[in-house]
Length: 276
Ligand code: PAF
Image (cartoon, rainbow, N blue to C red; front, side, top):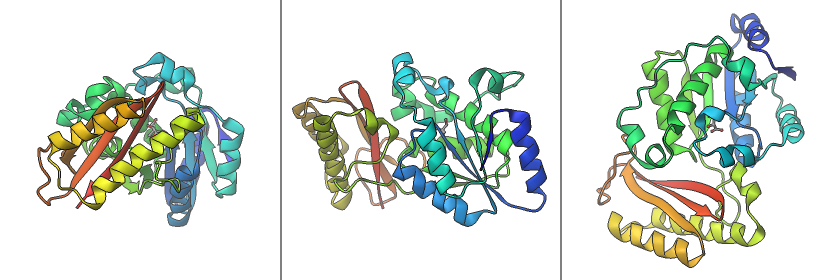
């Protein structure tokens, strides 16, 4: 596996390959886990050249402490990518990556007014810009993202459309631990007791997916009571249209999603389930 730290070097590698091979790309912030592995396997299976990136993007952190505490496991990450049979990984350093770049101005529309957009100001602008930049140097035919970041996936699809990029964006199902907890790099920061309680919150969400009869207001009240009873701090839970992500009062039977965010101590966790 080739490891590139400079934009010009990954671009040369890509340009050499691109004439005769399809490029698959998995952008990551490292601290890789089994959820990432599912993305790597699909990317590897569907493309002749498989490329990943590892970069903890400062532009998407609205909270400096969250950026500082974001887990970093570089050796294990490279070992996982090597084992997944990847051809290359791009591990840029921030200063050089942003040098000389003229970023587009993200237009996120109403996607930015709800849930993660509302509670993490600037977050999706940062995601939009970094994914645009990574696509510029990796030039993927297909790019893979987890549905655990459901709203992020919608933002990236919008970015590809707005910037008119020839990239197929592929969303991959959330991978869960046996007890229901959605896999996330942030889980590494949970102590054993919080980890167990967080799994109970995910199981509540999964129970909503199996049989959803509540109004959004009833669901919000139940979520708040549950998270507080576990000693967590609820941020939001929303029933939303699966495509526009605008809030709904009730589930009508049309595709919808339930997204939630809460704090388990200092660790912010998100999860979602779709309703069809
Ligand atoms: O989902 C992530 O890991 C990040 O938001 C991404 C897409 C790699 C952009 O930094």
